[in-house]
Length: 99
Image 1 (spheres, rainbow, N blue to C red):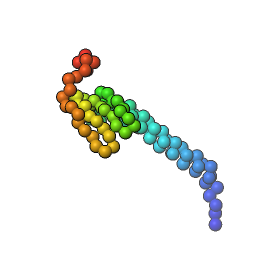
Image 2 (image 1 turned 180 degrees about the horizontal axis):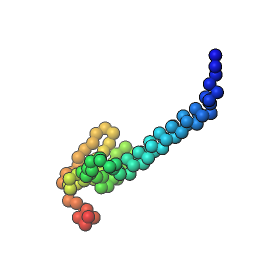
Image 3 (image 1 turned 120 degrees about the vertical axis):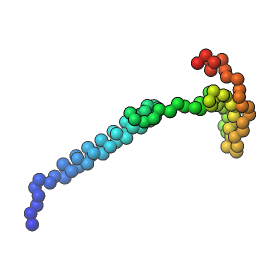
Image 4 (image 1 turned 30 degrees about the vertical axis):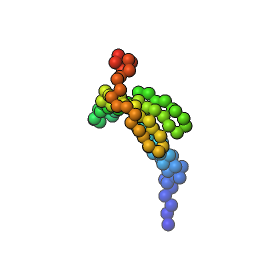
């Protein structure tokens, strides 16, 4: 019975931790890119169609939001029980006309 003297537990631990560190770094980089809306080469570029223009809390459970979709604005009341469309096709605000 021979023992391989070249095998080192320290070498195994260092190699394993290096691979884990590289995988963690790649995950961090991909998360950073995706959160900032950056696109990777070869991925399709999509224009955003919806945007929350303004949001106002009425109380802890309900809020009004103005949602812009395809150039039209809509006033919504959001609550845990139900969501209600208050008004559609609101005239755009003055700041929306400027941009």
